[in-house]
Image 1 (cartoon, one colour):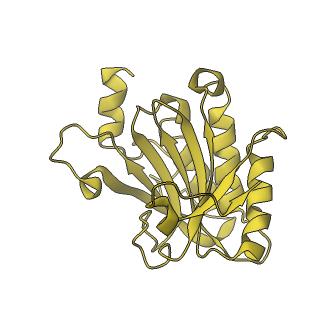
Image 2 (tube, helix red, strand yellow):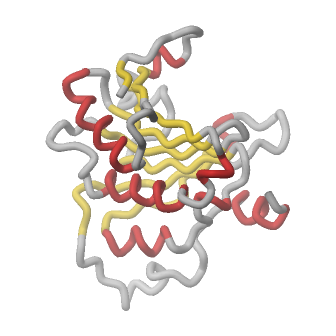
Length: 209
């Protein structure tokens, strides 16, 4: 990843010229059911930086128009540097396991291990994921989804959906729809694991679809 892009994402903010900059000309016509906050984790530069130093909120929005203004103003998924993350969570929920609204939940996740192959489609898949979350089509009435996460790693690019709890009955709809959002083949399986189990070595997924 180029030095220029690293500098661009290090202090990730909205570009100056966006649909949000002139409030007099901007009127939200399509409000969302929830407010959402975009977070960004920058790559660690030195070992003295901890998670809280790297994780920063970018902006909160509440309408379709605001979403597109933001989405078109930040680096796309395939241009993010290694060890960086995007997180989109409902307002008031931090993308951390310890947050009280995440602590009893877990995450559905799929890892695209062939990074070169997925580079050409990851922007589309990530956008589909974002739209399914803010449009609340990823679930019916379960009210389970807290947010969606994109991890850029050397071994794989991962997309995950974070949930409030670990109730199988509520989770399956989310998992089945995430498979469709990510356009997975029959032999590509996604798994659900609680945040508690993710901390334990050798833990098996709670659900595999």
